[in-house]
Length: 182
Image: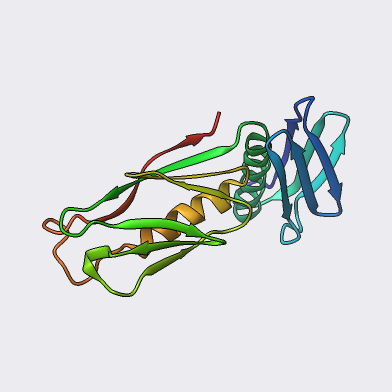
């Protein structure tokens, strides 16, 4: 029988970042923007803020609570990284048969003439994310990692081919680089 663990982690807050903790809702503000997240589902993880540190604690942690604890710690670190450095995903527009045109319209990305289709394909832009389209690239930037990665995945999924052989028809929009915006 495994011993129950007591977990504690202190996450430092950079000097130019402000953190507000209301119950289980965390709001992180920095030079790149604001990220807000609700950790209401984490009943066994105690969160508190002291000076320039966020303290996470869990008592009698079993396997499931340990996984939840470390996932929350990673989310908070990603939030702090996002408001200080930002995130950027780069996607490549690849076509060999029909020239594809990509543009943004409000909160969506419109992909026209993909494989010669008459109806445009549409991908949703999630949250406060900036999408820039150049001739051969689509650049997705923002301070919320989940919104940036979901937007990039939506664009990639919008050009997924089901009926054709992928070795012959390589047309599509593919993620080729991900990292920090700075």
